[in-house]
Length: 159
Image 1 (cartoon, rainbow, N blue to C red):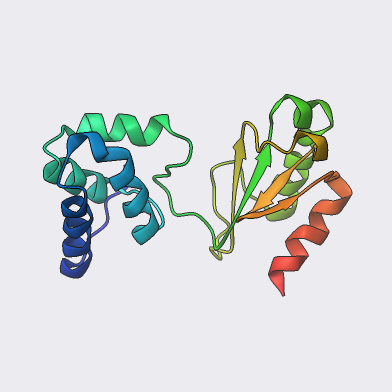
Image 2 (tube, helix red, strand yellow):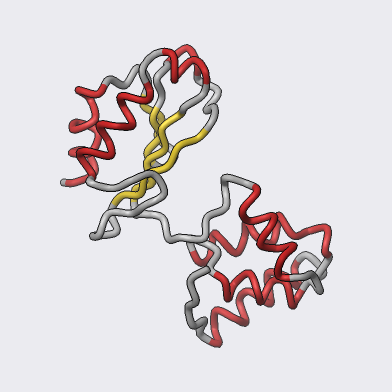
């Protein structure tokens, strides 16, 4: 896990989040959600602070962070791109769409472009199977995406 230095202000903000959930161990996922909202991701120092505040082992916190795909330990880009690889999307060519995003952005899945603008990830199902293949950029859903449509989507966020 990458190490960062948290400012005193951020440490205090994290403590307040934990306190807002009464430092309950059972509230770990809620605390992690709030923390990721503050930091944009969950680096080692954030996980360690949460473990300390909730009186949990660092291994337990790390296990939860790595189990749920919503959580990330690397900073996401300004425009996180997620390609659905659920059955309907996969059958309708999502893999080719993913390959085109990797080619256009010059990054692999899990990486962020050097300018911090885009990050690329995959997910299992968006729940919009009728629109397959589906791509999400932030909260915006794009349906029936073809490899030819990838450049157009990226261009929308590059202006």
